[in-house]
Image 1 (cartoon, rainbow, N blue to C red):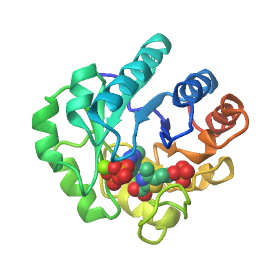
Image 2 (cartoon, rainbow, N blue to C red):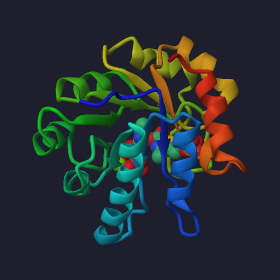
Image 3 (tube, rainbow, N blue to C red):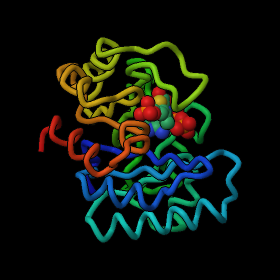
Image 4 (cartoon, rainbow, N blue to C red):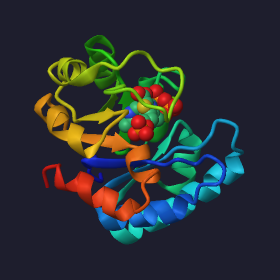
Length: 206
Ligand SMILES: Cc1ncc(COP(=O)(O)OP(=O)(O)O)c(N)n1
Ligand SMILES: Cc1nc(C(=O)O)sc1CCOP(=O)(O)O
Ligand SMILES: [Mg+2]
């Protein structure tokens, strides 16, 4: 099984974004896990083709590649695993679909959901929103480092903090028990995604 990684890039696949160029730059800068996340209305065909291309970049760099939501796409391209949340397949079902060896991430915003997700087979937890974000609408209030700490203290799997993560905020998230962070805007909206990834990476343990 590949490693869960400490610096996750979640792709920003909104129209007009050059996802592959961003992924290539981010990987060069030190991203060690890429999660392919596409718009809900993107066709399966296009999601498959994008995931296949991202996976190729990841394989060349020895980086972990996960697919958000679409387990069929994850399996079809041979990704290292997938990430599911409250609107997706339940964690136990996702584990059955992916098999025992895949990396399976699950969203957990509190300790109760976190413990259940781990019992059902999650390899790691995506925990947030750590801070406010403009990247995704409809989220609950930010839980902050204290909320991340509550989840991290309840489970023994790696906790990946997500939402509003910046270079400056990483130390507080690590102190809260996060194993790593997942970002969209901090890399995808940066003028120089490779430099942005390098700066984030510098705040994380090896
Ligand atoms: C690392 C990580 N954490 C949380 C999420 C959110 O997943 P989910 O709740 O399923 O929401 P969508 O991303 O599907 O909109 C994530 N993708 N990655
Ligand atoms: C995809 C996603 N899921 C979240 C959650 O809390 O469930 S926050 C998020 C996007 C995070 O983007 P940024 O790094 O630009 O804040
Ligand atoms: Mg989801």
